[in-house]
Image 1 (cartoon, helix red, strand yellow):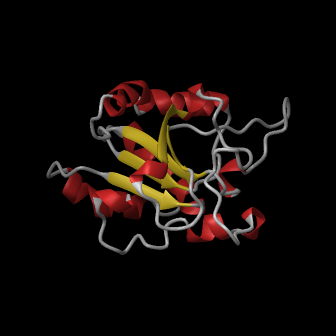
Image 2: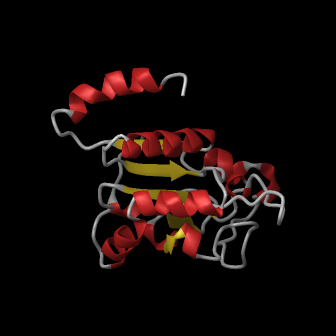
Length: 184
């Protein structure tokens, strides 16, 4: 919240001209992106929020509320039918073998952390990540698919130790390259 006024001051001239707002972040930045997107949404804007390899942010009640304010059930239907992510909506992209999205761990009764948003799961460890290894999983809070560990469907790559941190640190290393339908 220390910088929200600066963010508003920077974004408002564009939002007043009806530009679309996209808020995104990776890892810890994904937490900031979600909270910033929620702030903009509660102020009456309609951001598209995208997080990559983000940690869990809230409890089940918070996650349900996030899905409600971003109309993720409707967004799910649009994407399921082949449409683009709508404004507003919240989606999270994660790699099956990445440890970060399973943090913080949930301790039943004491602390329950859960993801919100539509899920896009990358099932291959090493780059490149073609569309064929991205699975659309629908809303996180209505799915039991939140990643807690590497599952049996992960496409194994030789010489990669899942505990090495490689999946988290290298998941999006080629973001600066030109994007094509083959390499999304």
